[in-house]
Amino acid sequence: MSPHSARFAAGLAASLLIAGCSTFSGLHDYVNSTFSQTVDPKISDHVHSSVPIGTTMVAAEATLSSQGYNCDTRTGNFTDELGRNRSASRFLSCVQRAGKLSFACENRDQVVVLPSGGVVDEVDVVRGPDCDRTPGPALTPNNAS
Image 1 (cartoon, one colour):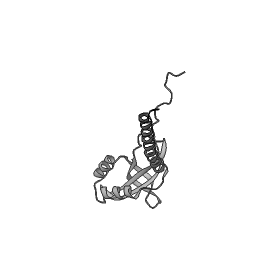
Image 2: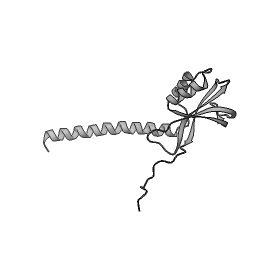
Image 3: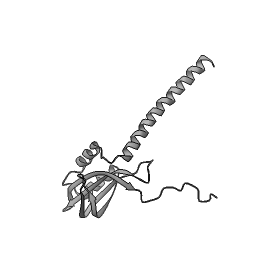
Image 4: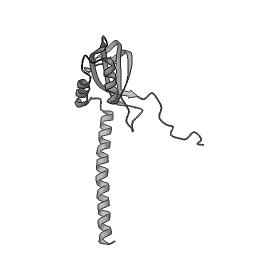
């Protein structure tokens, strides 16, 4: 092997090693956030500052949707930031959208917005399991035998 080829091979190996380490770090962060049941304080602070008490419910839903949450109006039970199980006759429930790589069931950030008179009265940011309600693509083609 010529010295030029050896240098090229060493440079290529180093590049692959660096790329692999950064990919591993990204994968580590993804796995850690996927299985974590604790909301990142930065995310909680950001949600609370972008949806302050007194905001209209329409604006709150639009803001959360633009931040990557799927929202719908619900009734019944929810868990607040203190971990208490509570119930409300009407609230906005928003769940962090799944990433490009996701599991059918995984922990995601969830935001509950309680209204009073058409405006935000309370915001709770929690993290917990959420399961996609639509199946992903089939693993085998329909015409496979």
